[in-house]
Image (cartoon, rainbow, N blue to C red; front, side):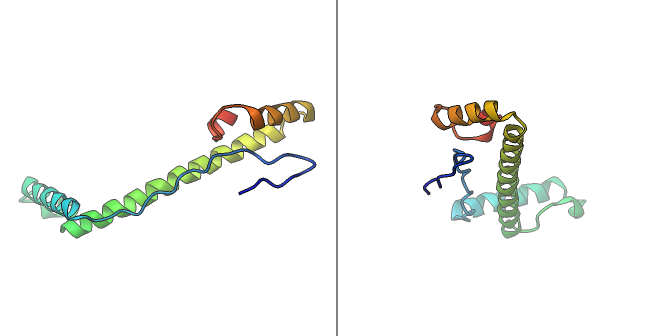
Length: 117
C-alpha cells in the first residue's frame, strides 16, 4: 500500500495489527480436550450442571470462539488507541502538529499508537 500524497497532511505511518489465525482442531488438541472434559466430569460427579463442556468438540468450539473474540477485542483496542492518538494530534496547534507529524514520519519508533501517544 503506497501512501497517497496530500498537501494538507501526510499519511499517518502505521504498522498493521496482525489478524489471528483460524483455530485448527488437531488430533492432539482433541485428545487433550477429551482429557480435560473427563477431568472436569470427575471433579464434579454429583453436580453435572457445574461441568462447563459436555464433549471435547464443545470445548474446542468454545476455545475457537473465545480466541476469535479475544483477537477482535485486541484489534478494537488498537483502533481505539489510534483514534485517541490522531485526535490528540488534531488538538495541537498547527506548528506543533506539523513538527510532530514530520518527526513521526522519520523516527525509528514502531508504527503503533502507543508510540504516537
